[in-house]
Each structure stands twice: as C-alpha cells, then as structure tokens.
Image (tube, rainbow, N blue to C red; front, side, top):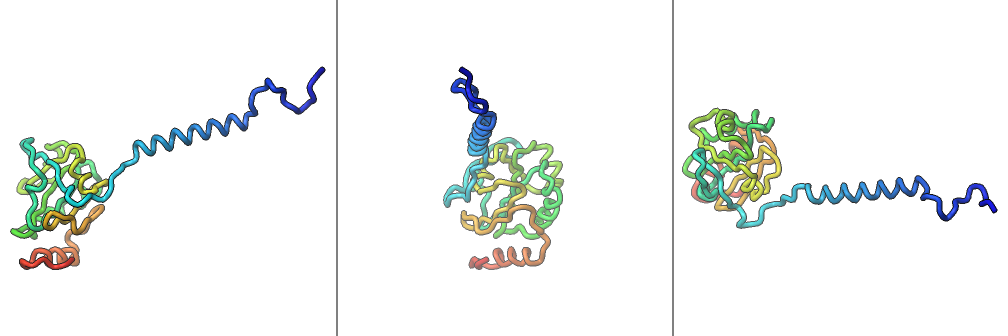
Length: 187
C-alpha cells in the first residue's frame, strides 16, 4: 500500500523550514553568548575606586593618587587614537598656562609604547604616565579615548568624554573658577 501524495511518512526528514529555524536560533544564541562575554562591562567608578598604579617613563610604578593635587585633570589618551592627535596640542597649551599649585594636569598614555607616546606628545617638559592595560582608565570609567576627568579632593567632579576644546573661553573660565580661591566653588 502506498502513502497518499503530499503527506510525509513518519521516517521522512524534517521539513527544510524547520531545520533552518533551528539553525538560526542556534546562531542567535551563540551570538548573544559572545556579546555577553565580550561586550565591555565598564561602569561609572564606585566612590573610593579611583586608584591603581601607573608607570613612569623609567618603568617605575606610581600610585595614581600620588599624582593628585587639590584639583587634578587626568587625561587618558594614546598615540594610536585619531581624535587625540588634534586635541593633545590644545591640552598641552592649557596645561602650560593653567597648571599651578591648585590645578595639576596628568597625561596618561593608555595601551601605548612609551617612546611612541613621548614623540606623539611632543612636549618634553610635560610629565607622562602610562597605563599599559587600561586598569586605571577603567577605574575612572573610561571606555574610549580621549577622556579627561577633573578630580577634586579625590572625587571625579566632571568628565569630558571625547575630545574637548581646551581653548574654549567658557571651559577656561570654568577651570579658573575651580582654581581661583582657597574655597572650592561649585562647577
């Protein structure tokens, strides 16, 4: 006896559409698992987490907190970062003009080669620190470069994500207010 035409027999393979749906579902599950594993898990730094160690140009470790002044601008950058190329000269000029007893500017090259970073900075008078594994940058919540954080009394009070215009009069005025008097003005 033969089976009716159009009806699958119990031994026939699954329909192609069902197999395709199963493959797509499996691929989506694998993709979701990879995204969960590889996606950056950075978050805003927890209070008190601003720490870690940087390397100086001689390869000696330095606690980031030892670089803090009353107000400290921590700038994370790299020679391989295209926006850093345009921003860095303006920040170097800002640091030369604005650094004083109340404001320190710390340049931190992230995942960079020391000699390449020094040449890229093109400012032998500016102290340079290195964060070869993003450890300190991630403690500050940094996920992209360039990124700059204003730290006052050990706490981040302002962050600049991406390149900032360091010769903008409004920005310069803001920093003058932060460093003008012994009492700390509100930003």
